[in-house]
Length: 154
View (cartoon, rainbow, N blue to C red):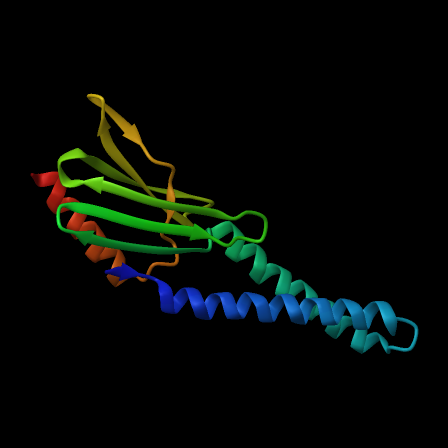
């Protein structure tokens, strides 16, 4: 099984911590605005900007859980995104006989890497929606591509 579960959990924890830190900094700024010294205002503003920058980076990169396994002659892809603004969940099952190929796409200045799967459906090549694999470790990506490449050679 190929999965980014460990990286997903640690990154999700970081995102939640940054959101909490940002909310606390905004609350402190709003409540103690008149009593704070200028240095404290700059420090809290810096924390807010840094936290928002990291959250936006994860949103652009396509933060998602991804797993892949081959059970018999069926490929099973599980995917769900937990982005700041959307939630998408998919489970894709493709038999070896119906697998028609794959394509890797890059977007957002090559920050986001997506996998598009193709399947033969009624004698036509059908594409599934792109799955973000940006947070899948490189070694796991290479294993996934090796399995998919082996199937394309058949």
